[in-house]
Length: 282
Length: 282
DNA sequence: GTTCCGCATGAATCGATAG
DNA sequence: ACTATCGATTCATGCGGAA
Image 1 (cartoon, rainbow over the protein chains, first blue to last red):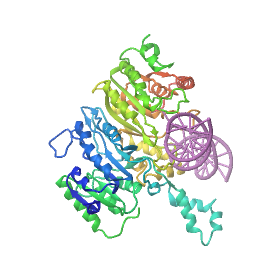
Image 2 (image 1 turned 180 degrees about the vertical axis):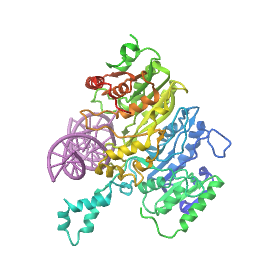
Image 3 (image 1 turned 90 degrees about the vertical axis):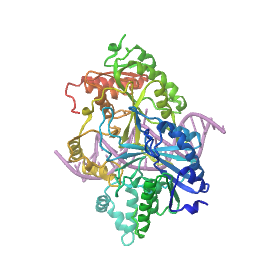
Image 4 (image 1 turned 135 degrees about the vertical axis):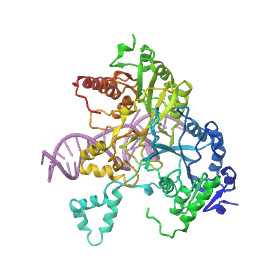
């Protein structure tokens, strides 16, 4: 068994047992939102906050093994409130991962535009989550141009420029230069984003609530992989990251332990792969 | 000497030597932005990242002593990049403060709308900073209603004040999922905020550059103190937090070591206190 | 009196160069 | 080898002069 046997599939099982079957340095990006810590033990799969780091470390070692040297590992996570305080397991996890050899390259933020309402006497609604970016090497693959955002109202700017100072330049290239000129302007009207992603929480287009909106994995997939690369989600949940990878012409491998999520992920992936080749323009 | 001798003054000196003169449990809120870690030693006061925690802890002990039981300590800080990685001194500081008895109640975020430019092969512009909220007790003073936002008015005013050009720039990033979508705020009367503060850095228009915009300390002062309460900034810098406290009818104590900043803080405070009682509506 | 455009500048970071 | 310094890169913002 090698990684190629798992391409474009969701595996039903424990990541700790599935990941060893993958080949070394065969995955270009890992993007995942692991089960959050939960002090209630009644729910299957809930990990106690105090045990979170020791639970995650063996899995992280496998992730490090399967990741390519220029690959990235994006971990979407947020600490729970325990006893009125923020628990420190995420901080401890970062420190522990560094000790295991991961580089903590950056901490991106997901700023949730519409988050669940709620009011407590000692805190407000939690409107952000961490997207920790780990790499194996200081040099890694990063396609910054793939996530550029338009700076302004493109049409307005274009028309305005066309009417005044750029008209001379435009005329000089009349006949053959229009497209070229516009392309230049487009380039200038695009800006690189920051390390804060301001996205709405996608409460699930279907009957289920995804852990994160599809735009979140999409953004990191565009940023850290090329078409054809392999994207791994070791806690696939409803398969959002895998669907995102497929839609972006990347290959995916998902792993999910829980029956209910596994079946849901299969449904979502089947639906995504059944769609004809009319992909969204990105 | 007691705390009352320091009310509404900026002290010129080292917090480690000034704070012991304050009375126990005499300060209702500490809001500060300490000198950031800096590996370059040329600037007086730059603390090496590896020494940051041990430098800060003795000061934090004094802060804990002077804070009231229901008081809050808000620490605005952000880790530097060292050798291509995020340094971990802030994480270690949180863990160390907890060991000293502080409760890490919440992590608010300052999402900087305009942040310093830059383009690098391995990261984007850094657009956020931490505002760590520590308390001495699970029960603390919190006036949630004081920071409710009149959403409709705010959006209207904001949109009205923006020129077309600015409006285009402001809205430009909304469509792609980055930046603030103003349309979300229209039509709602009042709402509690989240734990993310979306503020612009006050840049350049004045003759000095404040570490944080006045709105940042103002927000926490309104939230965690009543009128007449004492606000302490042990690293006063240009005195922004002290000015904010004075404008909100709170009393303030500032401490600043560096000559240049101390004089600047004096100027700003004098100016603020000279103003007649026509306070800005907040 | 408005609106618009140009421009300086900021709690930045990297890579190269110099000592 | 290691540290310190400098230049290049880059965009939101507000101010001031121009139209």
